[in-house]
Length: 257
Image (cartoon, rainbow, N blue to C red):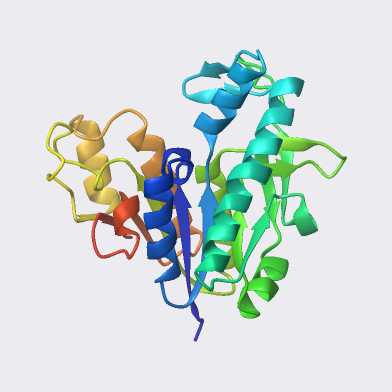
């Protein structure tokens, strides 16, 4: 029987503000068993770029990553944000290890091909080294993963944190019984976007199809849920969408087959 592993993805806003970061670290440290934390950090990268006089360009919420911007996100994601989290977890007796995809070659990506938009140095995940990550986890080490990967040819690549969490969960599901938790600003997937308490407790593919067809679920939530169902098909046991204040998995929307 596989041991349980919890993979939690939190957005940059949570880890960039002191009060929410401290609560997150407390809650994450309290989770029993094996665990992995994947984080963002976009607002800190934007602030540093402004201070350096570098314009941040976004398309549909995705950062255009030119050579200068790549230097900034590497410093911020892999350095400042990641190491603050690691230090905070160590203070809570969690033996955390900060990683980018380049470290130990844990996540290899390909530079996104240019179609309608040239995203620059942005990576699409090609391979996650589950065996190496699994060896770390089995030793009681908690990976803290920054949204950066590499191409195997010496180039770092800015990579979506949701994608890293999903692909890491899929890869590790061959070794562990994986629960994947996506944290965002709402309590879960809502029946009414104007009512924060209208959380859908359980969402199946049939319900997702129905609620998408009638317009209840729309916009950016659709790809997040599509990724969730793909994770289930790839072997992840359960996906939960909830707030960062509820990472124990008791609240939010549970995505199931």
